[in-house]
Amino acid sequence: WARAAGSPMVAIGGASLGALTSQLTATVSGSWPQDLRPDALLLVATTGRPIEIVSSGSLARSIGLPKVLEQAGWTAPHIERWLGLFEPRMAPIVPPDRIVIVLGRADDLMPHEGGIDLAHRWGVPANNVFVQPQGHFSVSLALLNDPEPMRRFASILGSQVELPLPQSPRRRLIGRRT
Image (cartoon, rainbow, N blue to C red; front, side):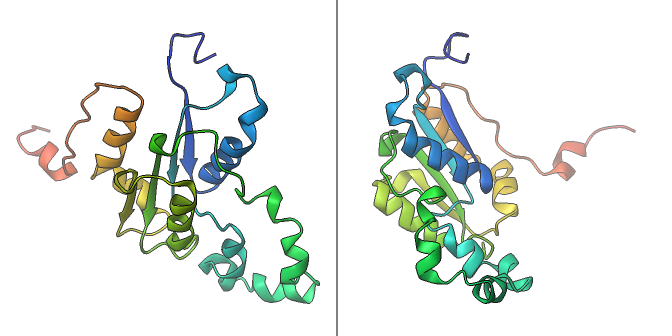
């Protein structure tokens, strides 16, 4: 419907689980009709090694998930059989220069090293990979204060839209009367 509405390019993306879903879509959509394939990807707070979310991510560790999985017989060799269902193993159909990845250096839920690994495997250019100081949940919000990743993505889509420079809420209130 996006192309029918006049969009020459269609992008998919998301943050966290939305990014993982977009990654998988980008790797399996090669057999889809051309007009249904994504032209660009925006991946925020993502990883190329989703198994780390349950094995070493902070949420999994805090609820004891690694131990529970082991006790239930989900050992590394057993899990390996199923990784292809949720781990992007194939190359994406989207060209690497049309992929933007935004990671949080302090992300301990989905460790950013897996996102760096994904960028390397997929050949994403360094100027399309942004590693910010935030954590998993705050890296998305930080895009409001640092629009450079979104500017880069907009340029990939061919947009000439100028994104406004961020202003703090305090600055916007100066001079207003209540």
